[in-house]
Length: 104
Image (cartoon, rainbow, N blue to C red):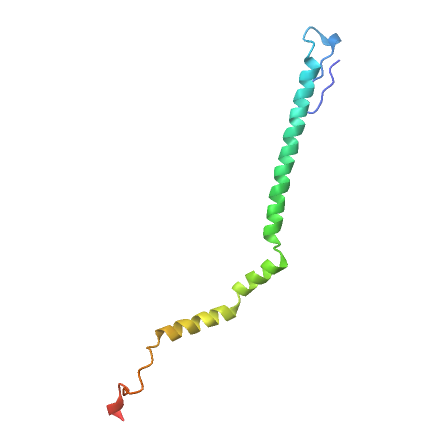
């Protein structure tokens, strides 16, 4: 009588027919061990992927603070102020008159 296991794998006994060899049981256990090792590695990869996902969705408090500071409005205000000051012409020397001196 053959006992079905998970997956199409059967333990073969000497009384099961002429398909028995001396190392049949060893071959069966090799397949079982290989499947166990495969699923163990699959679980390791799944755990690593889950940890990467968890760390990316919930960053550490200091990283979260840095991200908030990068998105803050103060940076935008400082950046626009720097752009406006760059657009202005450099101050003229004190001995020069203004361009519209004759209009006064």
